[in-house]
Image (tube, rainbow, N blue to C red; front, side, top):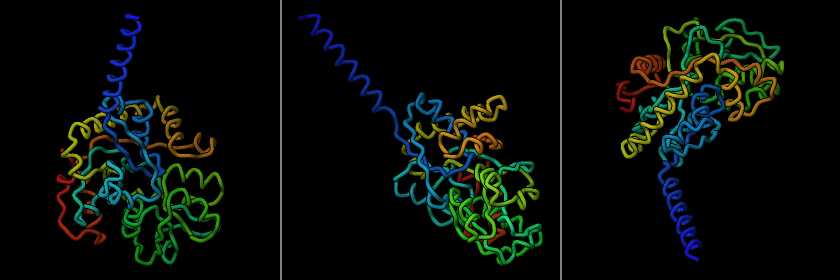
Length: 312
């Protein structure tokens, strides 16, 4: 009887301890869109890098990047993988949001994003986009802003292009359906479109890049970061550890596998998927480059201090 009581007490103590450990896990929901730019975050979640730092992180897919700031502001999600222009527009509009960590970055030699012309539509230059209907995965988001920059610097008038908002998963379908002339998109959608024969690459529109620019930054409200400094720090450290792994060429197949877990795609497309580079640190210089680009397109109404948009 004494042994049974002791065993029961031990089990009770273990249950309480386990419950205490579970309660100590900070719950964080992270918004993401269907692009491989999130690979470092995907790996951090899959490899338990968040969990070992006391974070219970769930990645939740959203259709369009500009929807993320509202989700953060409402508290339905705690961290969002916003494109940098989306974050800056949110701050410019009065939301007190900050970048916690970085993810994908631009590289002049990359072929991870492109303007894809529908098969049968003849587009060979920037001027050829004028008068065309072009799908973008978020008006005012990274690809839309960078593509307009390329159009202007290549001698075309971006105001003569009809942009319509189309989520990444629909890019292949709208090209097949013939409802638009082109899409500006990124991997893995570029590979899917080429494999399906629905479109061709008109341009990667990155030949005018002067330096590395952050594509995706993990952002949150400043209030959340202030109230959860340890969680924000742990999240940043997990992303940094994951970034080292995904940037190692020896791990490309592991990266491919983890991207496939978070973004549904046919095996042949996954096998052909191209990857770029990731950077965990968000720098004032990279943020300032976006501020200058957006000001040139009359997208900002205030004088943003790039450094103040980065969490300390």
